[in-house]
Image 1 (cartoon, rainbow, N blue to C red):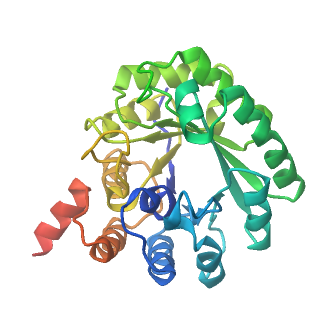
Image 2: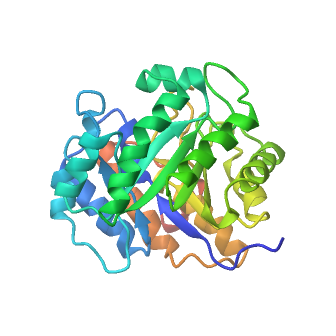
Image 3: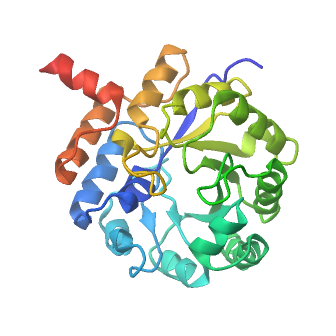
Length: 301
């Protein structure tokens, strides 16, 4: 199949990225980051999560962030919600899109949310139903699609089962996540092909971590199948909590550079995106994980 003419990037840095950074940042900094990202042309920016502040203190101010945002027309600001209580808080904050987060590994699910895969899906059903009844768009995440930090290899049948269940709940999109970043292109391709037999390809997104430096190659392999939605994090925000010292989310700048080179439209200004990454890295007192961001900074020096 030919490469897609355009690709939608789902910018997960302000949520998935920042919640895995050791430092919590003020709400005003998060707001500025999101506004810089949308100013660079990002059309989907994960704005936060309505989760327990006890477990994820970095996301405790999501309602404050949403209240302060100058929301741009045509831009989506999804938030993660784990349960009905989180949905209630999201609705009170005026969100228009939520995401639920499942896993294809039994052990990962047990250790993260204290239940089985089947039980986790049962928890999501009323959340998805109520959200859709309220007119919200729902996105589903499946983690550990190419491997689990506890179990190792994850059977493809389990990945397909969880993705299909989320699709059946009415998720407009299902994001397939290589949580520990161990995937390689042929395995990534085979995984997407297997899921696409149960969930329409146009409703699939991919989410790669760059732990072993394979994320861009994996993304290209999936683009060649026709996948046209990719999750990325500006400056490569977030670590991989299951691989000490390893980089986490693939950097938005690196993916935009790749797509530009392939002639694929994103609507994102690379230099403004890199500037947003530089801004948040200054706030975190850390260098960007993006190779492109470092190259652009070196060229400007």
